[in-house]
Image (spheres, rainbow, N blue to C red):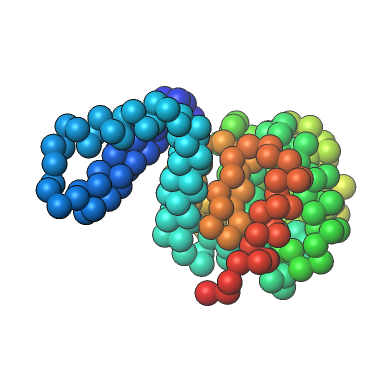
Length: 249
């Protein structure tokens, strides 16, 4: 799920859509205000010249269009996106604001985001962080993800989550070390891992990622905003504040 080619082309696709929207919108306005419809080519020339004279509008328009498209994708995912695997939650499980994080235990940027998420939780008592395991970087990532869900079953998700990132890249020995450090009942965990619902959870997360066009970790969803990469605590806090201020639907 690299999505490299699609990702590299997406800004140009967005730019084309923006220009088409600008031409369509401004052209429609001009036609609507004229007594005579005028020449379509002349209208397009007016729009072209306006864009050339005011190129600063393009990044703003691209950003707004991308945000609109992201909002549609998040809305289409429905409430299931913010419904966690039982216990796979950080912060306030009954919080009024939900931040969804797609993460992989082999992801260095995810590891670097751990203290930032902890700081956000400390600063926002009403914040619920739903962790969606997205093991896309290595085969051992999937093993670590399964163990994390087994830890959630035992009410020790946070302990395993921190221990696994602290242990280094996922491997048989680091996973077992993290499980021991988190105090898991290892036999019970192995039974849970073998249950179909664990595999179903990981499959659902992969499906969400495809639907939202997520091809890397960490990725974040809050409200209708979708953010990719290690965006930092400040950006996440701004998104949390915006979600708090948004009218309730």
